[in-house]
Each structure stands twice: as C-alpha cells, then as structure tokens.
Image (cartoon, rainbow, N blue to C red; front, side):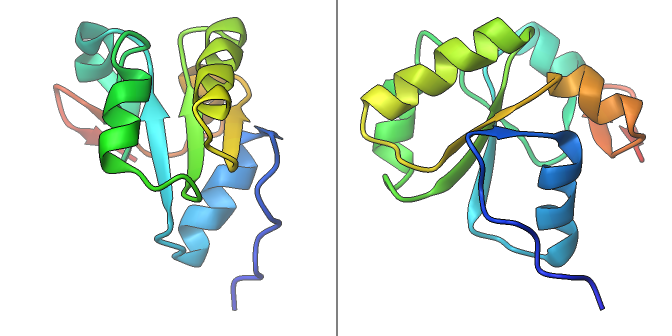
Length: 119
C-alpha cells in the first residue's frame, strides 16, 4: 500500500510530486513555464506548457483557483516568479518544484520527449 502523501507545500521536491502521482491523486496540474520549443524537446510526464506570457490568462480560463498546481521553469528563480504570478491571480495551492526538470530527471522519474517517453 502506498502511503498518503504529505499535503502541498509552497516549495516541493521531485519526491513530493512523485509521491502524489504514485498515490494516484488526479486533482493536480503540473505546469512547465519554459518556452514551447524547450518544453516540446523534453518535459515532466503529464506536464502542460503555459509560458509566463500566457500563464495567468490561460490558467484563469482553465483551472479553478483551488486546484493544486506544481510549477517549474528553467531555473528556480523563473519557477518562483511564475508561482508568484499565479498566487497574485488568486491561486492558493501553488507549489514550486525545486530543481525543475533537472531535479526530476536526477531522480530517474518519467519524462516525455520528442524522441520517446523515457521512464
């Protein structure tokens, strides 16, 4: 039996997110704010691409304010900036994924890339 993961934290590790995914909790969204070309080359499996320029408008149109959101960018600074944008727009459950894609890959967690799904 997989234990119930800890609740959402404002700064989360790859392990925090992976434990929620392994638990099978569907009520979360993973947002990648890097540019689309970079996203298309490789991203966390299941992530959606919302660049910072469109982040608040598209999130507001598609995600409820209480949704649990894990967000990452090219750097932790970019991640923090994007998370701040969502929080200012009224999103209350936003977690910054520390280390972003590199932190995720360092743990061997599944990614999607243009060549194939790597797991």
